[in-house]
View 1 (cartoon, helix red, strand yellow):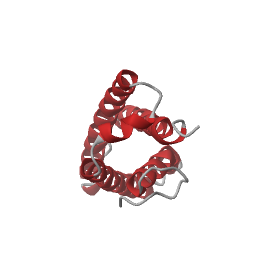
View 2 (cartoon, one colour; view 1 turned 180 degrees about the horizontal axis):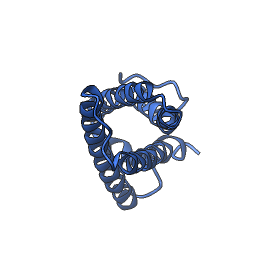
View 3 (cartoon, one colour; view 1 turned 180 degrees about the vertical axis):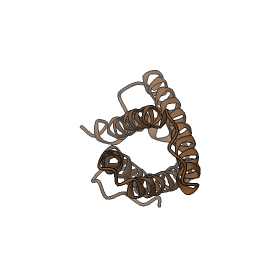
View 4 (cartoon, one colour; view 1 turned 135 degrees about the horizontal axis):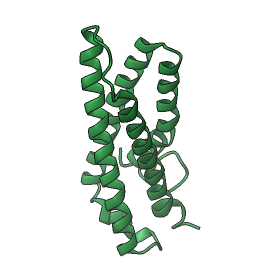
Amino acid sequence: MFEKGFLGTEAPLYMDVATLYFALLPLLLAGAIFLAVKKRLKAHAYLQLSLFVVTMAVVLFFEIGIRVDGGYWADLTNTSFGKEKMTIYMVVHILIALISILAWGYQVIRSFKAFRNHQPIFSNHKSVGRFVFAGMSITALMGVGVYWLLFVQAVS
């Protein structure tokens, strides 16, 4: 978990795993949305549930790695971006991530209850879904940005 990762930087394995997953997440979410557009609703529902569960597992793996490995501040010395700017960037990233994951969890739970009971999906399902997609995509982009600032740009 703490050995050097596979992306060719000094980042630990847990950081590489999380970065790669979150870089792919917007594409995976777009695939799930495509299933809904094509009216393959059962596949859409199960892919969304699977992505949510895997995302939560990756976040847990990442958070354990960060905490045990010395915390966020341990990696901050590697960037020329500046401690203050990096802290603001991280606060914004974490806020967007937290709001997005809570909205996604709400969407998954509420939708699966309706799906399981053969009830119609609630009227704001699409708008909440768009919000979640946008929020998770921004979170993913910012997460890749954190990785770049801490482990790629620092080497250049």
